[in-house]
Image 1 (spheres, one colour):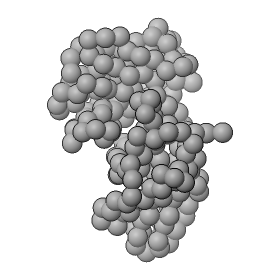
Image 2 (image 1 turned 90 degrees about the vertical axis):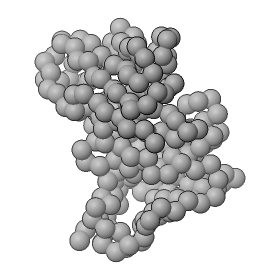
Image 3 (image 1 turned 90 degrees about the horizontal axis):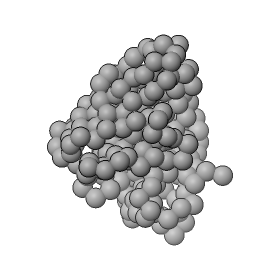
Image 4 (image 1 turned 30 degrees about the vertical axis):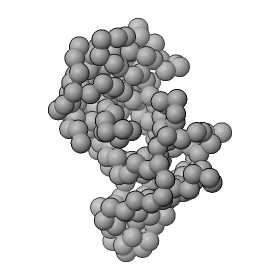
Length: 108
Length: 113
């Protein structure tokens, strides 16, 4: 079993839909990252969370430390949001654990 | 924030040869990381490179295959040695700043034929 599990693995949405990607983890946590990887391979860090909720534009990330769960929400999705979204947990042992990613395709 | 560049951005190499990937950061950082992302897979940490000391390798990765240099606080190289088609991957460097914030380079897409 992976230390970080993401769901769904693949997601296709119509433009404008509200999207949720889930991340559950089993390790201790210092911080949780949501990463975005575009088809070219480059990775951008969207959020770093250790508690609560963060919002940036149409993106919202939440974390529930007690339930060891985080969600990434995209409101009013757009084709340019099509990418792989990766959940990564940074543990107190200074180790990163990565989810396998959620491949999102937004159709115009 | 941190701006990271990698060279080359992509390469096609012959089996048995070696490739050195460079990672340059626009500011001094203590910890630099090298990752591999095999096709269809998520990121796997290869090693952590701190300036002035030998790199720390993760299980499954060895210095002879992936030698790393860290000559100063803004630069690191990763060499993929004696390549085989299984080494075809995206190789990324990242740095840690501002607490646990991670910044990633654009990646090097390696194809071994």
